[in-house]
Image 1 (cartoon, one colour):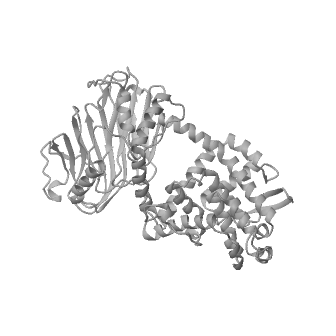
Image 2 (cartoon, rainbow, N blue to C red):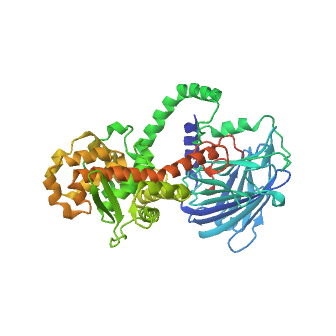
Image 3 (spheres, rainbow, N blue to C red):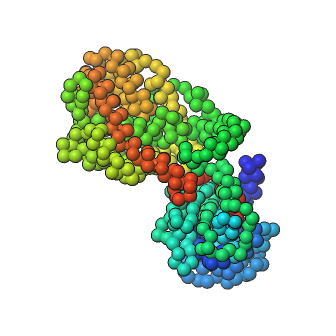
Length: 555
C-alpha cells in the first residue's frame, strides 16, 4: 500500500518544475520554552524554469505556522501577500513577494523566484507546537524536508538548540534520524543532522528527538508513553538493537518475522539485485574470467557490499589492498623459512598509484610496524586497539571512495541504480567470484601473464577465498609462473607455492588485526545508535512525523 501511495504522489508531482539544482539546505531550529520553535531555512539553489519556490508544511496536527518572512541573497526583505498567495501569476508579478497557500491540513510557504539562475533564499517562520508532551517524555518528530522536491538537495545541515543556553546531550535527550543518508549527533550542545551523500527525490529529512521532562513546557499534551511513538518510527528502519534484549521482546520479534520477513526479504532482495545487477537473483549471474572494474578493488568492494555478499568483510578488503601493494612492489616479501615470511616496505616504490584509502592504509601499517618496519600481526593488534577510531574512519572512507568512484565513472547513480555498463561490471564482480570459487585454475597455465594470476589472488582475498585460489595457482606449472616472475612484484611469490600460501595467511592475520578493534567499536556504536545517542541515520522508517508532506521546490 505504501508503494502505491508513493507512486501516485510521484505521478502528481510530475508537473513540478525540475530544471534546477539545490546545492544545499541549512536549517536552524531554536526551540522555545512553550514548545514552539523559531526556524530559519537557507536554500542555496540554481533554477532555470518556473515562477516560484514553495515548501510543504502539512500534517500540523494542532500546530500553526506564523511570522513567515523571506529574504534573498541581496538582503532584500520580500513583501508579504499574507495567506492569499496566487500561484498562477507570472514570474514578474511574483518577484519580491511571498505568501501562504492554505491546504486542508497545513500550508504551502511560497515566494517568487524573481529571476532565473543562482539564488540564496532565507526563510524564517515560527511553528507554534513543534515539541509535544507525553506522559514520560517530551518529543519533537518533524519532517523538515519533504520527498518529491523539484530538485533533491546535494547537501543538508540541520541544527536544533534549546533556550537559555541549555545544552542538548545524552544526559537529557535522545535522537534518531530518518529518510536520508547521513549522521545525527550531539555537537556543542546542539542536535546536528547532516547528509553524507547527495539526496534523491525519494529522500526526506525526519528528526525524532526525545527530551526529558522539565526542560520545556509544551502546550500540546498527548496521552501515552514515548515508546509507542518510537515503535512506529522504527518500522521500516535499519536501526538495529544489540543482542542484549529481553527474551520476551525476542520471542515477539521472531513470531512477527516468521510471518512477514520471508516475503519482505525476497521483494527487497529482488529490487536491490535489479538495480545493481539487472537480474532479480544472484544465481542468474554467469561465471566469467573477466576481472571486474579493470581490477579496481574499491569499486568491486562497493558492489559486494551493496549486494550483501557475506564473504565480503572489512578484513577481506584490507587483505586485498595489502596483496595489491605486494603486486605493485610497494611492499616486499621475504621468505624466512618454510613456515614464515616477512613483509616490509619498499622505500623506492612509487606510491602515486595508490588511491586515498590505499595510501591511508599504507601509512597506518608503516606507523604500526615500528622501528624495524616489518609488518607483524601482534604489532598491528596492539596499534589498532589504540587507534580504533582512526581505523573505523578508514573503513568508512573505503566505502565512500568505492561508491564515489562507481558513480563518477558513470556506472551508478547516488541512489544506487546502476547504468547498463555498471550492471555489466557488477555482474562481472559476482561472476568472477563464481569462476574463482567453482572451477579449477589448472587450465590457466596456458596463460603466461603473472599479472593476471596476481589479480586472481588479490580478488580471491576480496572474496574471502584467497586460500583456495592460492592452492589452485600452486597447481599451475611452477616453470610457467617462474618465467613470468619479472612481470609483477608478486612474480617471485607466485613461483613459490609455500611462499604464496604463507603470504595469504599473513595478509589474512594482518587485515584482521587491523580491523577487529574497529569492527568491535562499530558494533558498540550501533547499540548506542539504536538507543538514540547518535550515529548514522536510517533511509527507511520515521513514520508518525508531523509537518512536511510531499513535493515542494520550483513550479
